Length: 100
Image 1 (cartoon, rainbow, N blue to C red):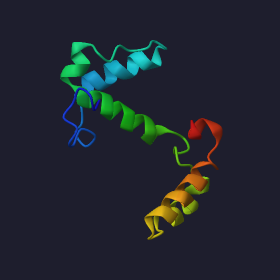
Image 2: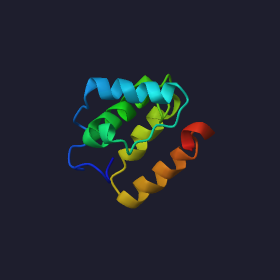
Image 3: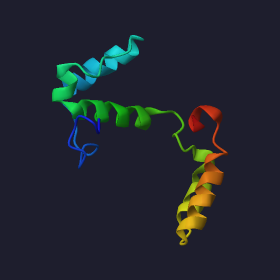
């Protein structure tokens, strides 16, 4: 996405709905979509839109409900170095699929 799109705002703008659905169908059919097809390169926002939809639709967020308070506490630390250390500690508590 960042290689082929204008990075500024790329994740805020929505793609064309038909392109997003076409891409979703390719993923859902267990095919590995060719993201270098002209249809996707001309509407790079459809890729970022589908990615955002994927994360929105997860039954448990990537940064799990169970660790939400720990992540919130970690990002609230004022000292940058201490904040990063704490965030890394909490990341290590994620379930393996989420961590990967």
